[in-house]
Image (cartoon, rainbow, N blue to C red):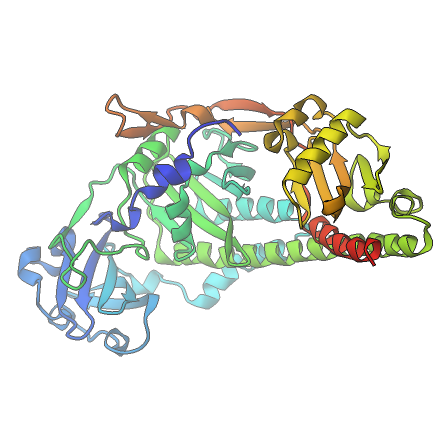
Length: 499
């Protein structure tokens, strides 16, 4: 990774996007006192449906404005999010999304009148997407799931482009599937830095399935009064679809040539795995029905991903356990530990997919495969001894932990050190060779944030053209099942050696 400041957490991740205190103009936001159901705060465009200036509606009961009584859920029940209701106001029907909080209720009202005759039942919606669901559920790899999902969501939604990207351990996102019209720029295979979707934005996806921006050129609508009377602060809009958008993200979309966007989460084990990102060159409004389809397919995709990855983990774990069991038999049968671990038919190189191994025991050094020279090994063992290991140590970038390992990174960019008896400097060391990694960034990651002269205000990068980075000094990462086997082997060998 480039040696740049961690804008993901240090800068972008500190912007309080949930307290923006504005909404997008495609909807009206009303805040009701949970006990009295009086309007205590409203977006300034509420006059468009209520017919009176916003200051005059504050402290009035919501029942005054409704031609039909709202459902009893407004006054009772548990806290909840996104309960759809149809409200009749001034003879027109509007779809309202209700969020019940501790002391107040949020009502998001779509400004486009609700036309019941064109709204579809759940059955008709299911008929529309059941083919897509069947394709996703029949996919046998995560890549196939994403490819199908991108194609089907493009077909259903009509967006100019649908991308699916996956987050890595550092929250950079790589586009692994893409479906688009010819006039859009392809980002397939590109990696976008974590600061493009910073920490607090990612956290909101754990609460909100999607984020919809129908027109980045919108004029923000303020709330009146500015301070919420219930909380005596800016109101938390984390759960609201109509929540305003910070200016830096609108500028980001403009630099991409995108006017409308829709982002939908993909979860795995209740953790954000990736996002479905939809872009459109012109403004595009989505009905609540279509947003619900995105939410439903997001759940289907997440469930299929979870199933496939669990299957892959189980198969890998079973394979590792079988190799581990064979090595245990060899330990009991062999005359010494090095012979048991390095002799055919099963060696620790096979168990851990390593290129070389070195074992120190009773002052002797036994090695197999590609390992650093003896002087380098002695130096490495001394460094390990100073760390006083009581558990296995693993890295896929050894020179990043121990800079004197740089000369032999071709052989040992990755290392798994299993202490047998660290007090006597006895270790099992597994090495992996260097695997040069090519990262195709969407724009120069070093210029992902552009500061103004004051050093405070900043802007997103202007270009998303390919910027290729070659990462050296790294190996293949150590897998979870391998690290589990390493700890099990450490405990077993420690008992065996010291019994």
